[in-house]
Image (cartoon, rainbow, N blue to C red):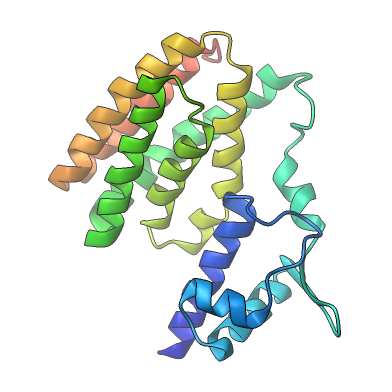
Length: 224
């Protein structure tokens, strides 16, 4: 039982570090007591999670100094986006990848999401909508929404693709030349997607996500 909890804790830490970027490469993690309280787990479970992430190269433990995020995480997370030079080609490749696997991810998440996870997905979708309607930056809200869908698949290897999704979302929003049109497409597409999630309709969610990817690529001029 504890092994399962430590794995879940490791996934949560991985998400915080890699997908959400709350702790950056080279940064020190909060102390063990503080972090275990934040995550709602015992210190023994936290140690097991840290050990697992250390073996994966995500964390580094320095005796007497603490636990740090590996600088390699930054190298893996960047994907060549430190500048916007050549961004269109990179975006095309990223969105082609997203178009291939995210519809399937949506279908799987729709079928597997717990009640709590489904509630989170719908709430985060509403956050994206609120950001667009109020004119606020939606970058983090959009990343959180797509990350919640990926987490609900309960598939470890899909979780590892979160940095790719997050970077594609962020770069599209920051560098897009048709932000207003893209935002309106997102409003409509997300509304349809959330409707299928509410109905627990995996096939509908899959088609809605495919439509969302297609609209994004068309608006940014990334289609073939």
